[in-house]
Amino acid sequence: MPSTHPQPSGEKTAGRTDLGRRMAARREALGLSREELGRRCGADGTYIAYLEEHAASPAIGTLARVADALGLTVDDLTGASAHRVAGRSTARRDSALVPLDETECRRLLSTHGVGRIATFTPEGPAVLPVNYLIAGPDIAFRTSAEAVTARAAGTEVAFEIDNIDDVTATGWSVLAVGELAAVTDPDEMHHLNTAARSQPWAGGARSHWMKVAPARITGRRVVHDP
Image (cartoon, rainbow, N blue to C red; front, side, top):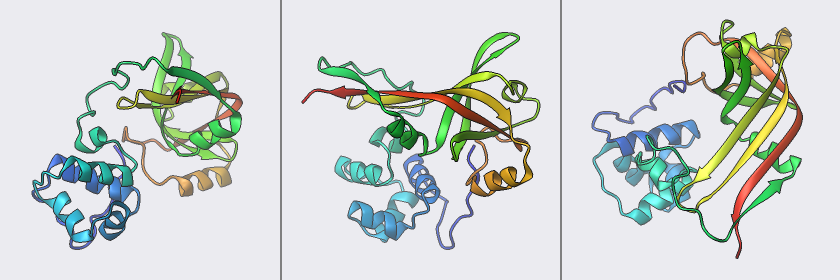
């Protein structure tokens, strides 16, 4: 799971609902105070504190504004999508799949987050989620020295990220293909450790940095005609 942020002084945790916990966790991950979040969604810090700390039932319009300010959907904010695979909504008739140029693909990659590494193992193909960051032209992530991805050093792998919006039936995906290598240069490892804002979600000892040097990057987006 993500690294634990220290609880800001004066902010309570007792009595939080799932909505309140999600709001607080996302807000803190973005480095926002309650007042800053309130300004983004047209409320004040006191109301944000109330939503985070009490069993509140805000109107759907309020939820939508808070979710948008946090870069989430309402389902993400309320937890309705937590146990559901994205992409179950019905496709629209005016949908079209358009390619993304490399500049846009790299922009989407630079948002950081969770991606998937696809590699071959002695047991067959494997696709594994990793928390990643962009280091210059490379895609870097941490793992353990005994992990499948660590053992795949020196081989060609694929790295993929995507975003699916069930409400609008839209989405995009980016695929990078290149050689996977272990990071061994001390200065490079120091830079990566400094740039990493949180621990890998999987937890445990994951101090072994790996990087993918993309030889090609492609992407696609589902759009709707006007």
